[in-house]
Length: 265
Ligand SMILES: [Zn+2]
Image (cartoon, rainbow, N blue to C red; front, side):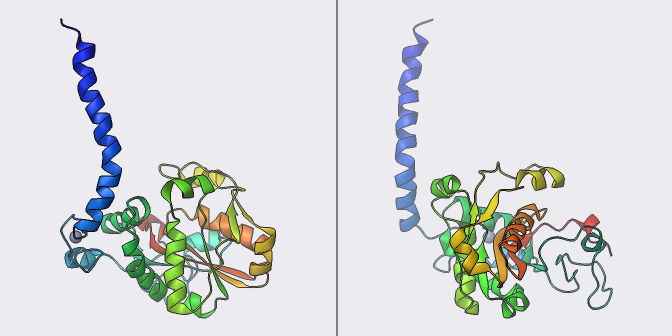
């Protein structure tokens, strides 16, 4: 066999070179080409965001739902009824609302915003959230985004919850307090963890800064995140805010996981 190391080094070098080029190239292409629908990759032209077909596939969360957790009920039990889960294991927050169910299309939107720098999606997603959370916002004094650890925030360049908070603030007139809540522990990603593992993972991960205490003390807070999965993250944030003197914490997310088995009355 003739020296394979030499034969392989050339493509490897090329690959490395291509990889180095790709990031700036992709940025340039993003500017030059019309945006793609993050769910189906169809060209959507000037109107950024999902294509019409994918928009229509999103499932808005509407009443009847548990007034506390915001989990949709299969049938209408009457006004003000709470789910079994809300009674058996009440969260630190008062109410949670989400714009849509977390399905394939919602996941594509959230991932595009979070990992693909599709900041152009934030206004539409934020509008949906402002509508889904209008009752919470009507009672609120301040909006607080769920923070990223600074290391992850740096790697991703921006915090998607802060971007959504900004839009919701514009729509509702409720101010955002960006720096009140800090993530003091760089927790591993919650993906693939069970409910109790998630709770353990975020325990003690959030703290209100001394300056932030002034901003949240005796105020009604709407906590904003992109997705609610088990609720462990927002619950840990709500605990930190309440410990710092917040009067009430509600939760508003773009999407939430709806497990049919949990929506029991
Ligand atoms: Zn599409």
